[in-house]
Figure 1: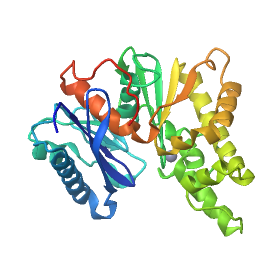
Figure 2: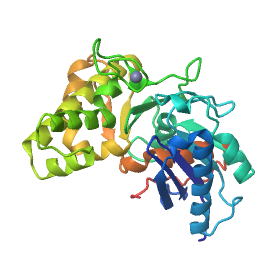
Figure 3: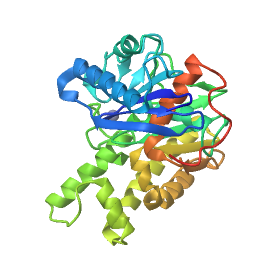
Length: 322
Ligand SMILES: [Zn+2]
């Protein structure tokens, strides 16, 4: 396979994904496999390295061939040493994913939180390309976030800024994966919707177990499914309203697998975000990225090229699709 590529890795709570990313932001040789969380940090590191090897093999590349290597992780990362400093999944805290990748590739590897990585990707490709005051959201099992101001990521004093999934929105809400109650993602994330579906099924409602299946049902016009998506949209909009008031972004871009169902929750999300934010902040553009399911993976490559170069790698063109 000819041409230049960056290597992108996305370590999620459920899947490890890796791919090659070309200068137009197109992903190829994508491999996804379950994250072996039960086997601990060593097991996850092994799976990362193995997945990357398979991607390179599929692309006919050697470890030294990619122009840069980037990895997105589900938690806040110390940019100095690549160690995860906070995560809603407690077993991730303290895990160093950079070290095994650096040893495997024999080169420096950029590690970013999935929210930061996706937001850098939104700055490079898609409807908010080149924009400042950009808020990026990754809607997956939880909700990750990033913010670019004056061309730089907002990181916070302890590198844990923009942990927006844990905005405490409800005084007596659901228990969150972080251990606290009433966090935004415990009500509005993909994991929250799975819990709602499980509870409704246990109560006798004829509903599917997975959000993807609920999307199929909504696409077929099922009123109950459409109502559930509308409720989720309103909850997503509530948290976005809080972020609009705090950050006053120019644009909000959504990515992540859950955002693939954007058309079912868009209306309620926009209505709630506009109604609940202050008038001066409520005018931000709120859009879904063109390929939401791959936003984090593309962002990992953008973060890597931004940190490691070459500066002219990505061409100044919006990709047509993945
Ligand atoms: Zn939480």
